[in-house]
View (cartoon, one colour):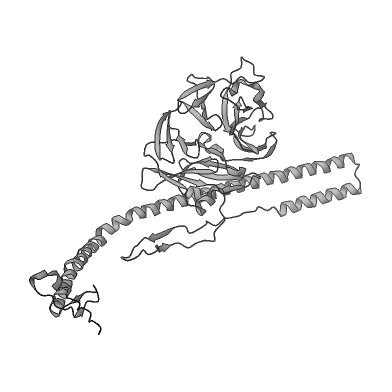
Length: 496
């Protein structure tokens, strides 16, 4: 005969111990899954009612009071900051559009004037040719046919003078506002509250493509202390030049080192081969040429370099104008002569066998000035200040040359915005040359590829980027953060 299972006792009775004999739990609470006797099930319901009133209802009442006051005071304060951000963005994008339109109008006028002058010159040449034939009287039927064809062609060029105008749409949504909400039990995806009309997305290239297709590999809040331009030393260390200091950031450890720099520095270039900075500095005496130093960052030893150059007369002062470092090469512009040094040790400047130079008119025309020079595995890039008899204001020309110093193309640039604050950077994979300037209302950022095609980097400008640097396949971007005194350093990896 099977044994009967023992009865389930009341959960409340069991807590009373030996004071009273426990009664069977004949009623089940489907909430807590416990059994109660007929007496204690009533008490259990009373406890639940008390819990509801003393906790949930009290919390509801407190929250109701907060919501009523929040709607009047805190709501306005909470959105005020975001309204200001939207207002600032509106002003920035409006100013950017105005600048782009002004540049386009100016460029249009320049092209129209240039083409108009070209047509006038063609007409003058053709008219002179006709007058010469009339005076000499030695023209034949084929001469008349040729002149007639040239006149018809020139008339066609005048009547069908065309300018190609391409207006790019702004890529992605202009602005999106999202509410980040969470429910009690699970997270809800961000819900768009306000969204502008999206446009047909225009393709992004170069740094703009990084910003729209990637998240930063590293993001670090920078010190609120003043920091100057960025100079990557390796994939893990970056220095900032400010006055005569070189605060240095270890990206992996996120730690800072306060190092001393060189006073009156104009340019700094890190030589990965020498593990030193090459520093161009103003002389401490008036009307004396710039000085060139080889600077050990960690020992803080600065050695002034007087490069013993080939074919240089000792009586002539060396006027160092600009320089660059690339792998085991150093390019120095001295008196508009380009000197290329192959670096093998710290005394590289005493070894004339590792020296090549180009003088005017190969380096530049005798009356022009080389303002900037860069190098990669395939090209030299130069910015040259060109003086003209027709204009008192010089223009700046970007010239791309092969390693034999043959000019592949040249074009006018925006370098005259502020030459001392303009960055010219060779992008990874030798794919192009980045021009970047940030200062006041004249911000600009664009890339020239190796065929001379220009790509404006509008996403960079809209992202409040204040400085750009490149090290190997890493792109370092320094950005301003809204409503914060700290900038942020973002590092992206260039995709091959």
